[in-house]
Each structure stands twice: as structure tokens, then as C-alpha cells.
Length: 193
Image 1 (cartoon, rainbow, N blue to C red):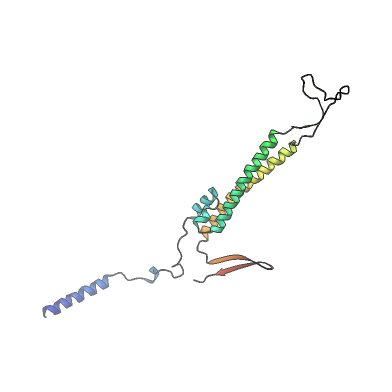
Image 2 (cartoon, rainbow, N blue to C red):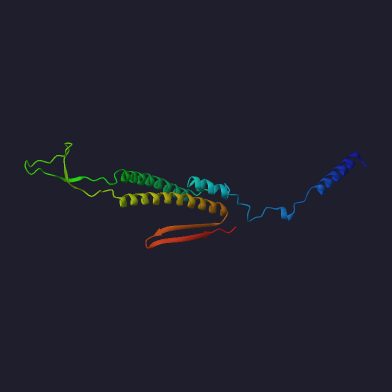
């Protein structure tokens, strides 16, 4: 054998040995074509729940659901403003509970002038009914509790929505609602993979 043939033969044997020793790709190791384009959700369902439970809309924002997140954040902002307003109404009602204003003063029949008390103040003949009665204070307290319950419900519902959205991250359905001249149209689009 000439040296060039020997070199070729050795190269062929080495190449065959390398090829024979290389791991073969098995069919089970190939990427599933159905799941090839689907990634994991940006955050876990537990973390999505916690984000939206603590700050409604935060979990939805992490999951690219801006409309739902904005809705929960808007409900939170309006709820906080109305909790503040109803707390102020309750504070005012408690402060002035039982207060009344004089409707008319007693008149001295001799002089025709307002009668005075022994301390020098005007003597009241008739008082108005108190505007802030106990029923009014109770109604203001219930109003405050109702708005606080709206906030608690918003936190729980936003957390649950983010949890479910993270669980259904790879669901190939788009659901939409559009207004029409006669009402609303609801549509659902499915993607085939």
C-alpha cells in the first residue's frame, strides 16, 4: 500500500468509528411540533396570584393582559377614592351626631327683643331636629364598609383572574366582544397547531 492510500484508509476508519460512536437522535427526543412554539408563562400561577392580590392588575400586566390589568387597577383607584370619601362622610356624621340648630329664639313680651339666659346668651325657643341622627351615622358606616368590601373583593378577584390566566397561558383561544348596531357580538377564535 502506498502512503496516500494508507492515509485515506486510516481517515476512512476514523470517520466510520466516529460516525458509529455518535449518538443517534431518537424519535422520542425530537421536539413535539404541537408545543414547539409555546413557551412557559412569564410568571408562575402562584406568583401571578400574589402580584395581583397585592396590587390588582400587576399579575395581568406580567401576563401581557393589559386590558384586564387596567380594569382591575381602575376599580382599585376608584374604590380607594370612594373609601376615602365615605370615611370622611362617616367622620363628619360622627362629629356632628346629635347637633341641632336653633329655629327661633324666645322673645321678651315686654321689650319685644330676644330673651336672654342668666349667662347672657340668647334663649332658644325651638331647636331643629338633628341632621346627623344615629340612623344617618349607621348609614354612613355601612357606606364605608360597602366600599371597603369592594376593595377586598377586587383584590381577591384580580388574584384569581391572574392565577387562571397563568394556568391557561398556552390555550389557543381568543375570545372577544364587539358592539354592533343591534347589541353586542361575542366571538371565539381557535388556532390549530
